[in-house]
Image (cartoon, rainbow over all chains, first blue to last red; front, side, top):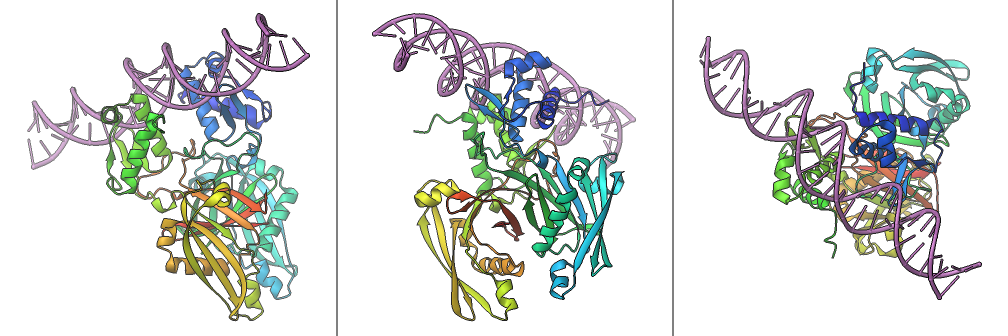
Length: 238
Length: 238
DNA sequence: ATCGCAAAGTTGGGGCTCCAACTGCCATCG
DNA sequence: CGATGGCAGTTGGAGCCCCAACTTTGCGAT
């Protein structure tokens, strides 16, 4: 029973759900503090805090004297999005320079996080995700295996995106030689730079990273590849 | 007179100053809510809000039942750090593959932001910064010019770092073909993933980006290069 | 000298209220 | 008909309070 959660979270989660599933489209007004207290039977403090959290996540924006509104470009796909890559990798740039043709295919299957992945990605062990095994080939001959763990919704709309992402990775000549992981979250704007406008607010992306080489964390540098629907960060040791 | 600022900001700014100038070293306890109300003559709400903001910035960390403490690795150098790059750039990887030797040198001078830079980096026009002009050469012959605007403290400890940064950029084969800018800030942890430990908390970096090609913003991808004292993000259109 | 325990202090959640500044809208007046 | 003024609603700052859960500390008993 997780009913002992803070009540403001109930409000946050309900509104967030409505935004993410489209019931509250961009531009739509969020109920005011007074309305929220009535609707969810909570105090003003909780209602206010919920609005602050949502505004911090960049999902809504407050206008003094007017109200809170769903952000125009909430970039929902980057909310709690991550992938876990394991590309032990000699890579396309090298191989192609040797005149060899590099191809790849993959197979995805749904699994639960399990203790190891759960610990690394800080998820519950029961979190459903998609495990994808890539097979890279040079001139048709299997060359290497790579593994990627992704949240379900990511995998959902990724058939052609997956191909284009990998292709872009290759185009950049990225060499991924270690096990890496990245966690993407929309993020509170810093307290200083506040007023982002409803319309074309700056793209705010928070990348929290822990990198692993076997058991010990390693310093890495990241490549953020923005797609039309999301951004992905590829990390590599430097 | 800007004495009509919110009072909680007075508290935030004073404590932040003490942390950044070292009067409050890592691990040092921050006055409790009760003490802050007395010390700054503010209400509990303001004291509490100030602590929340500082915790959000990652400068301090709250421990229930114990108190707030200065974070162990506050990574002050990444606080409000940015550079503005203008590398119109054919680059080392290409040239070197053609067997040419690429070198570069630079000259820095202090200036004020001025209207153009101020607008792009959202600074005051009088903000002091360092303008650095790079000259890239292939086999000794001048090849291209690049411009970089940086905050003063950055330029201060950068003689050899500058060289190694540029070298790493080259090593990664980065091609920067547009005017880009990046703003680095320490950032509130997302409301979800809370407990970062005092000691080895995960490196949290917030990169807020606006990219310009002439007058219109462009989609870019980023390369974050972590140094020992700071991280720098290089952005490039994809 | 060590152990256990209670008291004091602290955070974080939550409630209630007041107010200044601002927005939106409607009605009234010229 | 258009401009103006006023009123209701909203946000964000601020104050004060209560409480549960937790940590620290110091005291007293063994």
